[in-house]
Image (cartoon, rainbow, N blue to C red; front, side):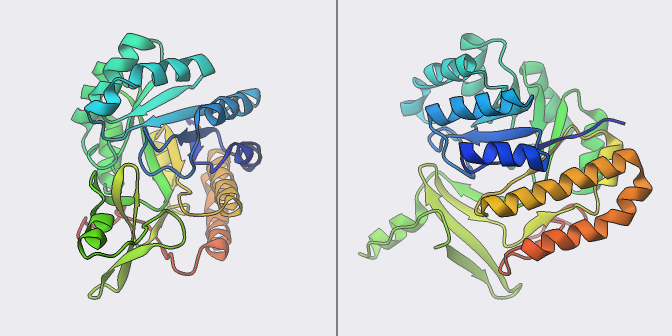
Length: 307
């Protein structure tokens, strides 16, 4: 049975080594200028150091370039891709064909992972981008378990699935909140971190965190995905990578969650029965460190996508 990779989102270079000890196989990093919804800001020297730290332990580093690119940034892409190749990045994560074309021209040996955030919803699209050069497709976070399993069964590329953390439900290139307050004559900084603004859904009693960065406005899920006690079908299906997203959490939280998923995956590969005995305990450990204002659920794995 295939051992799925566990990919995590570190906050800084200093988090790499502790997360390796916790069981991480790969690290998703990047710079806000080029990537969407990153857990930490990794400038060029940080990327170089992160790659060196990961490669010393036989782990991988994937760099996000899945922002929405306008003309003003297109001319920068080749230089950035050349840098990533030079420092040994193991893959570039893209959504825009401009990145794919740039990688083909500048670093044709570089691996590509297709991640358009919300639109990787069928096997045909995954295979289309695979035939264009992508090695892996990162699926939409709003798919059911049955849809994920069907995509994997018919995919010609590796498949990555987010199994834990906050998800982005809406993105706009415009700074909607900042513009709104500017229109009202108020100066309000809308920043990443604990000082979220929230959209409140009274009917469902949900609060959706909203923040702005260089890429525009992002509205995030009110709950965190957690399917540590539902991993069996995904492992049996041969899902290639489980992603743990630590955005807006702290390093200690991410280490504990990574350790729990590493234990769960290894237990299942040893014996599904062992996993069955452990999974309740592992879920309880995650619940113990989970922020009180961020309930855990299984996302859309077992329910219809309804807003």
